[in-house]
Amino acid sequence: METAEPVGAALRSALDAGGLGAAEIQSFGSAREFVVRARLEGQEGGDADTEATAQAVTRALDEGLGAGRYRIARTEAVGPKVGRELQGKAGMAILFSFVTTLIYLAFRFEWRFGLAAVLATAHDILATVAFIRYLDLEVSLVVVAAVLTVLGYSLNDTIVIFDRVRENLRKYRRQDLLDILNLSVNETLPRTILTGGTTLATALVLSFFAGEVIRPFALVMSFGIIVGTFSSIYVASPLLLWIERHWRGEDAREARLLRPTPGESVPA
Image (tube, rainbow, N blue to C red):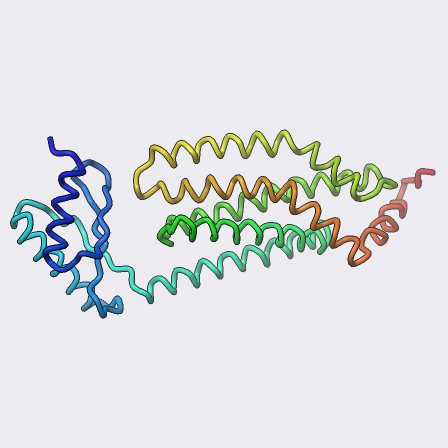
């Protein structure tokens, strides 16, 4: 049986001879299945350009491999317009998640908590986008889904820590906020490490053994889990501390927490 390398070499020779030397060839599925990404010069991604590219690829394969010796399963087009729409919708989804998170945390905790969580998550998204650019991954629906998954994962981890911070603020009313943040991070650290470690192990396995379609998702998830776990511990809490001290929120919180609730006495 022929391996993927000789078949791929034959495809490359046929496309080069047909004037499609810039086409990308990737193994997909079995050793005899390939994805060919090609574009004719001067095209802008319209339906007519897509049909012209498909015809050019077909002619090159007919001449190089022989008609009837291959089968084109499907033809898809991703032009600049589609790419812009995809990026725009992904940006709107990220922005919407930031706004809803800020509103939720401002209602459930305080606006300072929400701002710290959003800034920490923005750090994760920027780092993940830089990772995608560094690996030159195609910004497909799978990659966008991975970025949004990283966003939700990072936010969830940060909210868990902030929830413990809120509990400890009520429990240790006279302690400094820095001590409470350290205590809260240490108390939730086993949960953070175990959750991140098990998810990371799964994503790493997919990165090595998954197919070409899932591998970009797994790579982005692996990096995002590492960055998200790091930011939940080392970025979100310091940001909250800085915001509290910058806007004098710590004094206001202390005064509010020291105010006795009905049936409760203030500790001496």
